[in-house]
Image (cartoon, rainbow, N blue to C red; front, side):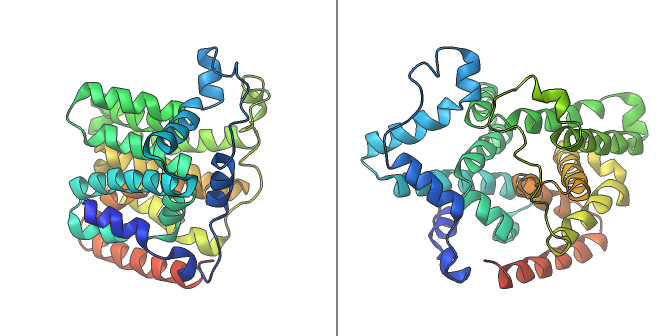
Length: 306
């Protein structure tokens, strides 16, 4: 597992991308190459810690100080930890060979460039693979302080787990699947046309309006749009597995983001380990068809990556 993570973070992705740099990574390197510009009172309250995501700031800067690393090497170390956690989840849920699917441009960009999001989602997956409840709760809560978008993502997983504990829904899983889809659609609506409903709650937060515009083109979306009905309706009972319910919900968010022309690819990237495990659990022959399609789509993404 460690060897896989080392290889993952060591590949020359920018060369593969035709020399195109990772924009977000460059911004992070520049940010942590200079002194922090946060207000000294930013962490005086719990809300300040959450809204300013101070745990991320302190984690990166303390690692730089403790390990005597520059910002680039520190972020590479965080990428290593992030992919190691996600790989552990995929290996547990599907097997070693399925780790190769993680070399998807969406997921690579998440790990290697969107460092804060990657670190937060990796803590979430770590909370799911550990057998120690205290560790699971601790890293799960920490992920929210790293990136506040983890709160709805964590809720997606545990609500998906909870609704199928209801006897009626467990006996008629299609009802639960429809609930998952409506939940994902609802969150996407709150990110777009219904944003005014939450804007007052987080007024002044830099995340307000960040998903509006920048929708994903159809040719980059088609595979994920096709996966949603496969996961939801080919065998609805599979969604009684929390991993599958989570993947279905996240793809529902992306699907509605595509319709509303919102930036939604981050939801696919964040859910990618669970998507892999969901494909693994599909019945034959749908599993073979889906896996083949996913591999071919990944190859096309790599060809046009940049």
